[in-house]
Length: 436
Ligand SMILES: *[C@@H]1O[C@H](CO)[C@@H](O)[C@H](O)[C@H]1NC(C)=O
Ligand SMILES: *[C@@H]1O[C@H](CO)[C@@H](O)[C@H](O)[C@H]1NC(C)=O
Ligand SMILES: [Zn+2]
Image (cartoon, rainbow, N blue to C red):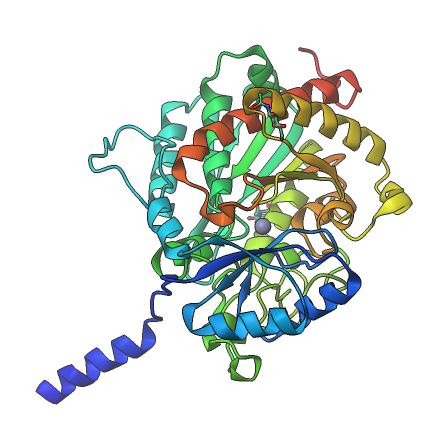
């Protein structure tokens, strides 16, 4: 009997992945200044000894590299061999995490607040009760289930209840560790349902909104319970040994959902290796989360006019316009790129006016790095939404994914200001032709 119990305990212990601790991990800022340095950094990145916070490595692109204590000497040797300069910016990454997961000691369960990062359960409970409290215009939609059988839940906001409406889709949390994204999306829901600001009211009421704060629920939960830096979903279908890549096998559980959409899938800035953090999946739309969004959008396209697709990520403070693989003159591949750019610039000027936070506007290839299979590129090129933007929210890298809770509300306020101004520009350009 005792042996049986011991065996059981051992099995449980083996099956449960260990909580990844970032104690005494140092964070470095590195900005390659030549193609030679880019190549050297890519070689270092491919060894998987260290965690690069940005997947792309480009001349002039400021990256952050997380280095565990036992890898410290190795890191310094690599850098000196390649004569690359790195600046130590954080002594202990875990201390940023500890600060970020702080919760209020006393929590009023009737009140949802944006001064700490809410768990998935808290977000879903709040969505249910908030929809119920605004049931004349709001309702909950469940578009599918994840590998771990969690619902992918959204809020539908429909003020006018007319035939053939304009339709907007808001997608957050595709990448698990980007916690500011769900916190922004729940704020947008709150504003659309309660704000008295005329600009917010216009944006809320002109469009039937489908808002999904956490499109990667399994990954989001995992980033709370097991590994704060988790990015992918938790689909175990491709689980394999990652030893040859110098990575834990757990890395092969999951697909990068923002590489899994059926638009130029697996062509650039994505990996076919299940152990990779940008693994695009065995096929386009292999994942329940991306497929459910696509199915919903196909359904919606028959019920009204698709207008907005807005995607929320972090970090770097950019407003990205499709398509993510084109740069320079090729940006015109998106038919209304000039309009999108103008709308974006107007919106980001307004965003800056609130707290002096600056955003840059452009395609990912131009101002970040090339990617393919992203949800918002598919929304433009596959589903033909005219107005498609991706926000890379706060900050520029001082905290990155570990943005302190005190920044949630200022981030949300400025983002909302920017969106309202974008909608104003959208109306004046004639994309919205409804009666006000
Ligand atoms: C799309 O519509 C089909 C047919 O009505 C329905 O079975 C399916 O559940 C819908 N899917 C989503 C995600 O809305
Ligand atoms: C706003 O930010 C810019 C840099 O982004 C800085 O130069 C300027 O001093 C800031 N202005 C205020 C009022 O803080
Ligand atoms: Zn992201």
